[in-house]
Image (tube, rainbow, N blue to C red; front, side, top):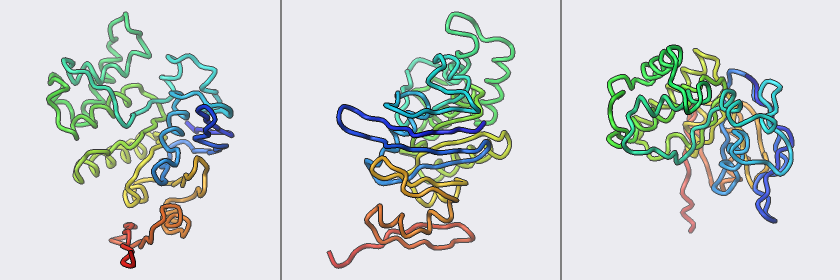
Length: 259
């Protein structure tokens, strides 16, 4: 499913956090939003996912405007993995992932056989099968992130929005999670809109990068072009070197020794 963001503006009081952002994210592609702290990345993805009402502009998925939909209908179209998800203790991994099916059967009804097949499939794809009966509070950081992603995948949407999904993970778990997402894009034609601080990983996994600064789109294009642009270094206020390592662009900040 394609995602079209048209003239999106988000204001809080007199302050404009996102200004007149327009994006057209094609179905089955991975678009990552990058930019310095305070650029408006989280505000933008929350507005795209329907968690924050824009002051003006619109977001539509395959021609359906999200603002005109009920919360339940929207949850069948687009899923979100927030930066700081609420994970209640005393709940099993299975039950947490199963929350992704609530949009289909409601809170007062039990999961159907089809719902259960979907949940089992997600647990298998996220390599969480052995943890299905574990209390969520006993999971490691990497296991917890896979579980949160599993809940989003259990919604069976074709669009997932992720806000810094690898925050707090070690390098191995970062790569594992991003590889899982890349597989979903390739195998299931999933559309991903994400934010990432790590420019090297953003460039390696995304098809397209959007550079945001001051709430406005500064640059939008293929990942390799944006990573290698002079504008990227300028917006971060750093000297950056891009090194090719086995075909992957690695972004290295260079220390200013004159300070």
